[in-house]
Length: 592
Image (tube, one colour):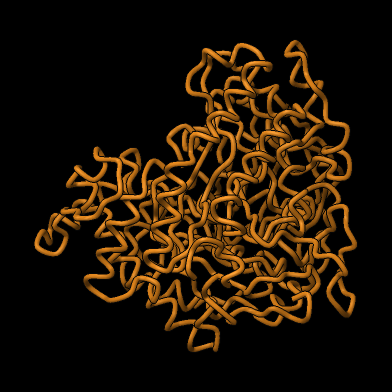
């Protein structure tokens, strides 16, 4: 994930023959690999997880609760997505900031204790749709709503909680419009268990996700949670500090891990998780045990059968993210650790892959060696935990690669080979992020010149792709794309770049891009970045990129990919935001 993408998220707040179950193989099958050889269960009050899941169909005969797999799979065998999106939760409180109450007067779940009061105020006007939201809480204190929200009627006591409705007025295109919740407690009064549900979602909802969000995931084989886990620059080290679903508001450490497990359970899709750079050995062990015990392999198998999955179920495990990227703290963290044991992490590279500026950077090579060493430890911890529940083969460790050259992947693989043995016994994937862009802004002044420049950039990746093919064959591992897609950014010609996201030529360019990937790596796993944007963001935020395959999860999936326009470049963005050529191009690779 580039610095531009990181800045964007900070600014926006943000089988066919039978059941393919988890644990049948940790590797891609030869036909999938192409040129490569081949503590914490939830209680009922914790976000109300459980119940029945399932995906909404995307232009297909999704089986849902039917007995057998669909005649045609509803999921791609090789395309996945990073899951970042504007409205993933049924409960809006998971988007909110914590209460401004002094820390000593907050309970373990972030609510003011008895007799204490506090306010949570969050800039959400640009993100939330207008409508009537159900709100509830438990306790005898007072909960008031203000800002873009106002209480409708009076509180009613139902099923042991206080219930009412809130009218919210969205303010798309504008930051600075806050939703405010104020808790007032006197004496022994408390307010806990606050929920604020999106329009159309009932008080007693058992699934924590926005159904529209889940529907958008339908075509994808796998889900990467790097953004959800706030992986870049993470300060999370101790397991006790991990985000929890019972805690009010958004955590600085990302989405509750219960939600990650539940989304995998509900959809049956492969999960791709990232271990924080500062995570202690105890954290890694606890995290592995948590995932092994919170994944429901029976539900996963049923969901996979219903969607017609043809690949083995995997939990892909990555050591932080883009460890080569000096713009993220993982690089400095890992370099310091490597320098503390210079005799083990020598920074010497004796292979033949380029580019030379990369192989000649001893610090970078040390980071690559340390990352690989730590990945082995992480992979062993997860394999042991999953072995205890009979699914050791579901664990698929992934080594970070750099799309500018195969040397960074090679220095890690050669370190593993020298210190542990055959890398294929420790690493399933080497992953890269082959984004495409224009060489500069001389071609971005019109749509007529922009798209040929994008297409030329795609074909320019041929030589480095060939090197990654050789790397895969050499070590018996599989190449994957951890991120990818178009990566237009910058203020120069920004309106043209924005319009390009809705043009039929973007659909065609994605078709070329995905075909080019398959020519080199056949149906090796490719994860698009990312699922959906936030359509209410002010226009100036788009200088940091147009990362969603969809403008937002509320798009009409039955129509947004149809009758795609060829734009002149003079249209307003608002007039074409109903189109989704990127998403349609990805969805059209079902079941390919």
